[in-house]
Length: 319
Image (tube, rainbow, N blue to C red; front, side):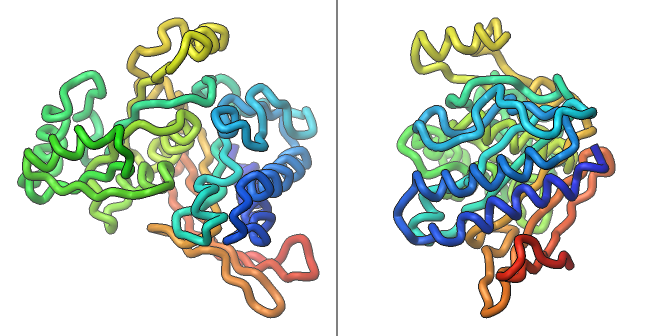
């Protein structure tokens, strides 16, 4: 896996660069299409036998790298891939913050193979690992996280996406005295934020996309935290698709090990627009500059990478 790290970084950089013409354009389909095409091209150049096991696009019928798609040269190693060519398509085309390109990879069989559907997610950083249970009442999880981190309730910070479906969680957490921070878009960014001490995020909670759940689970695995999930089929067809893909109890709790079962995992993301820990693409007269994160699960390393892409070249120098 280690030998593929920079290749996966080039994949997210390429997708971010392809999205540049569509920042602020209002055209979600063309933005997704450009990033998806760039990702597919780069992935097919890689020396691997890759397969998409979970990805974005089916729910909203956007351009996508489809589940089950084979990528790479077909040579060893066999790799599972989770992907979202643009995590935050709406903020991209509206010129707003919190848009990234993101990919995660692990050896074959190590990532959850599931449909693009909704998932309930609960995530914490290393200090609270082992102290959450998605099947337990929310109040119990809040108390255990506070205890594990040695915090008073009014010192606890919880990230939740600003959606009507989450209002009951927001109300309960605030009634307990903890602080709720709402965000509009970018599940993966905020899931990962639980593991970065300087951001002072204690818990991530909410219902969002299953692909973002697996992507976030890989990042959190690589940073020593914990995530749990639970798929939420909304129809008989989604339930049947889960069964078809080998998930015989679709609504059962998914432990972190079931989301990603190995430390030999890679997470790469490149900023399109500004977010909590990445700058957006910066454009100059002769080049574009991208900022990315690269997480190595084996070494538990978090790398921040700045790359310069000269406008007359497909790829530029990496700093």
